[in-house]
Amino acid sequence: MKKINNSFIVLFAAIFILYGCQSEDTKSKHKELDFAVEQTQLLLDVSYKADKIPRTIDANGHLHWTRDGFDWTEGFFPGTCWYLYEYTKDEKWQKGAQFFQKKYEDHRFLPFYHDLGFVFNCSYGNGYRLTGDEHYKQVLIDAGNTLIGRFNPQVGCIKSWDVDKGWQSKRGWEYPVIIDNMMNLEMLFELSEITGDSKYKAVAIAHANTTMKNHFREDMSSYHVIDYDSITGEVRNKHTAQGFAHESEWARGQAWGIYGYTICYRYTKDPSYLKQAEKIADYIINHPVMPEDKVPYWDYDAAKIPNEPRDASAAAITASAFIELDAYSDNNYLDEAKLIINNLSSKEYLADLGKNHNFILKHSVGSIPHNNEIDVPLNYADYYYIEALLRLKALNNEPVEQLAQSK
Image (cartoon, rainbow, N blue to C red):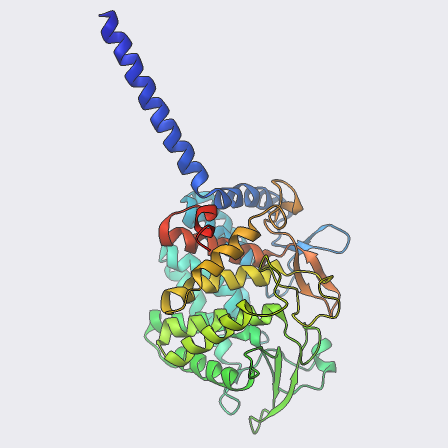
């Protein structure tokens, strides 16, 4: 009997060790996502207490919240909560997303902003994808209807900024369209999918085609702002707002471009969009001033390179786009994405737990020309970083370090 008991003990211990090791492996397999859960939980707690949506850190080192009225970044934190709900299946993240996105739900009717795709697709769009909630669908439809109200068929684009007030009114623009606007097209494409109404897709295609024609130089670098004549549709100016100079190459603009045209190919399978995304990707990868760690300077032509701020947000957006583009292209963009993510997950860019005001990534740039959000965390950098990690996880369920070794 004693021998049997000893055997049982040995067997039990072996099982315990085996399952303990498996549990630890499972826990550490996606440690970047696990860290994102821990860090964002702290930010969620602070945000609940403040009853506000976190955006960044201000010049004095204090947590800075999204603006009242409308803020183009207000959808990213709820969107991050939806992504963490997708990863963990923990309802606290669903509740967090619902709580914070409700704060700006009425903004879907505001006709003054082009950023409705950013705001509502990242939050309500992910919510609808994960839950099928019909209310979320209606919010998206309302936002889409408002957004296409800014479309001018003579120009062939959705107007980005109104020019009757604020700093935009001082630029002499008539109908400015920014490369960022490519990111609002995903919501329009998706609305045609879920409603069966082709009007949204038609606007998205027209905008993508006009942007492809006018926004890119021969080398596939992008202008930030193209100003059109609202009557004739002719190009009036090729300018920048957030880049170093009108003819410079603003890093996040390049990221918006590759992400946007990858989206266009996803929904249309038009080979011209795939070719455009590949050309932008190749331009980014092979740029002579791209740092070794693949986290770009805020502008590729900034005057004091290499002593210029990096933009982790541009890197995160690009990495996420590369992962999707790789699925469509005969070229290899996945290894580049893995390298970027591996470097963003290093001590240089990834915050310590409880530091960085509980944002995940350090070293992003909002707008240096506006002296705003320089070398700080940004809520959209975290959003696209988590998105990229989830896309890698969906591919092969491997840890980032192992993925990066194939480079």
